[in-house]
Image (cartoon, rainbow, N blue to C red):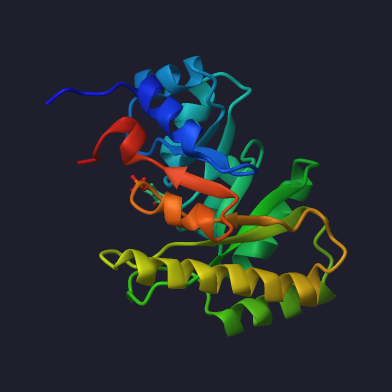
Length: 224
Ligand SMILES: *Cc1c(COP(=O)(O)O)cnc(C)c1O
């Protein structure tokens, strides 16, 4: 099998991105060397899903990389990444939101976050239902959280669906985002992101409003 390199894959994906869509290169489990290759061809947004791994890569790699956290985040781990993380895609509780706020304030910064919405039918996919999102936003909107800014939503589709079914799930997320915007962020230009689409479904996701695609294996190869 002929291996296509990281740089070539990134260029192919970039040529397919619709206007306004950002590529988050998901480098979890992958070595520093491959991330440097991606960096070398201009990629600056990377995503990781383990706190220790993220911290280590942050320390070793150039400081103009914007690091996104994409997996389940435990409240007690927030402090390890609070000084540098640029976007947390996976806020799914008031507790986590409050702790991110507390840690951000300690570092004198505002951390951007997305609310993770459960759009897949699988039990394993984390995130909040539509109603739970509204409950969370209701509690947040009353409180004082100067260290966090909600800039959008994130979701993952169910594996193994047809393209039409995947599209339905993504449309559902777009609709929930719209509804949240109208109710809580009406005149707020910064609430605009929809993080949806991975290696297998990012083209569908972009067609229905994704602004951030999270692509790992297509760029860096299959993970073990
Ligand atoms: C691993 C992961 C991705 C990337 O998946 P690929 O199929 O390798 O592109 C995207 N989003 C999340 C939340 C992930 O955990």
